[in-house]
Image 1 (cartoon, rainbow, N blue to C red):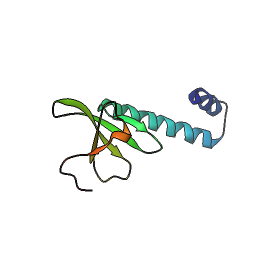
Image 2: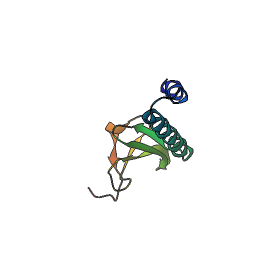
Image 3: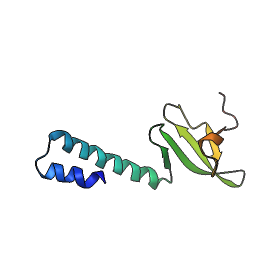
Length: 93
C-alpha cells in the first residue's frame, strides 16, 4: 500500500525525503528477498527475529536468532514459535 503513494510522491516532484524513503524500501525489499532465498524467515522486524530451517534429530525445526545475539544459540519446533525457544546443546548461557 505504501509503494504506490511513495512512487507517486517522488514522480510528482515530492520531497527529497520521500525519495530517500523509497530507496530505503527498495533496499529493504532486496535484502528480504536475499534472506528468503537462503530459506530464512524474518519473524519479527521489531525484535529482529530470524528463523533458519534445519533438521535436528531427524525432524524439521527452526534455528532461531535474535538481533544482538552474538550467534545462533537457540532452536524451536516449527509450530512453537519464539516462546518455545530452547538452547542448542553445547551452548552456554
